[in-house]
Image (cartoon, rainbow, N blue to C red; front, side, top):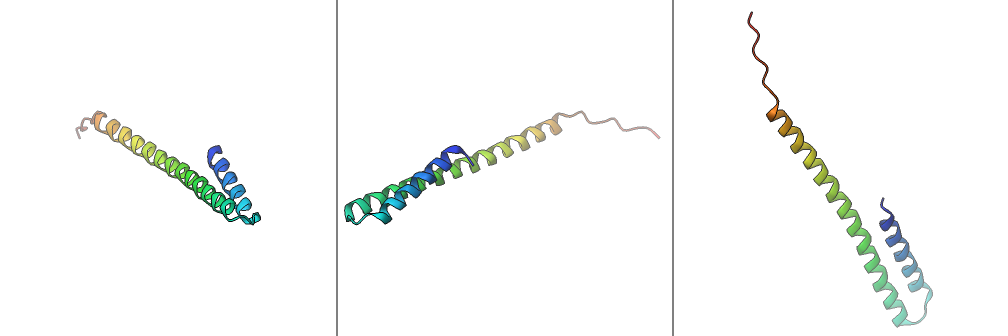
Length: 79
């Protein structure tokens, strides 16, 4: 996983811990909103990485198809 994913998850865990440890409602709400935002950023990183892998695979398949299309056709051998 990327470093930014790990960073985002660590911040989310800190925010969740802060929410669990406070007795003040406004601090808890703020920490929970923060946790949700950090988790969304972490999920976004995973989606981007996944999309990049799919795009790379697509580019690879297209290059291979182009190479096959441009490859010379062997001449038939006489018997």
